[in-house]
Length: 196
Length: 120
Image 1 (cartoon, chains in turn yellow, cyan):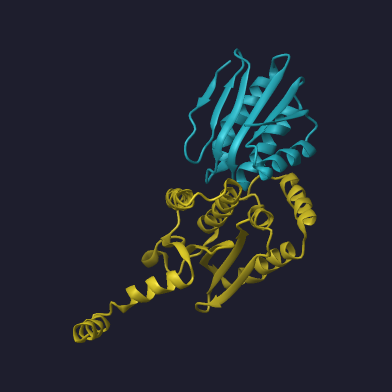
Image 2 (cartoon, helix red, strand yellow):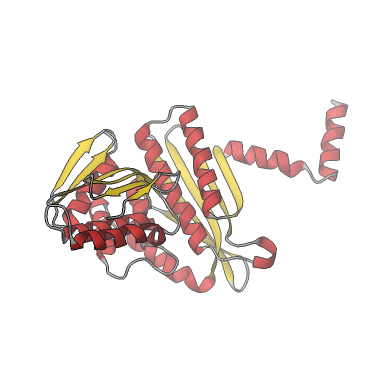
């Protein structure tokens, strides 16, 4: 017992307790995958492959797996297209966090990334306007948006990602902004997928 | 006419466009980061093909996943095909993939081309 306490104190002194804390947080939040860092297409592919293997490993239903995969793709590519950086020279480009949680009933796909504060209103309005729609309304919005002439945006987006996430999820998109500094806010987005 | 024959990768589809052998196929996963760049040669190929198309053009989509940027480009392909006489779409979906079936139905509502739906 003494040894244990000693080690525990030592780990605090060494500043290593965060490892255990992080481990416990992941368990308590039922997180099966967490990625923090730069987001590129290569990393998107790796994260997708890991999540896919994870879902395969316990034989997740094909239909559920495909929905989770689709939502992950849109979420990850949203980050690599739109995340703004704290300080690019220090943190790299598109520094963000991406997580997948799994309970008995649902998967939860979560992302968090810095955005410029002047885009908060835009993002909020977009998500709010999606959240008021039912399945039929979302289908119509999807069709209206895909038909819109003018091709993809300069960032290569179709303006369909959030709509598609809402459609595949069947739940409301949850979001939040936390202030980082005068210029930036941390944008969190949470999408739920039922395992039925 | 040139053949486009691209092997599928983990984020781009297999593409086979072969006028002489009457094979027109896009299949697999389409999640490229830059969908416009990936599909540009295919759109250009269809432009050239439309100058002197076969009497019939059965175009097959057999996609497992596609991202929303790709969906916009798939609609561009369909819009090109719409102007080619004798085009028909064969839209494959996995038998328990309602989302892919619905995606095909939505595309069929956006263009004036006959769609045939098949499961695999």
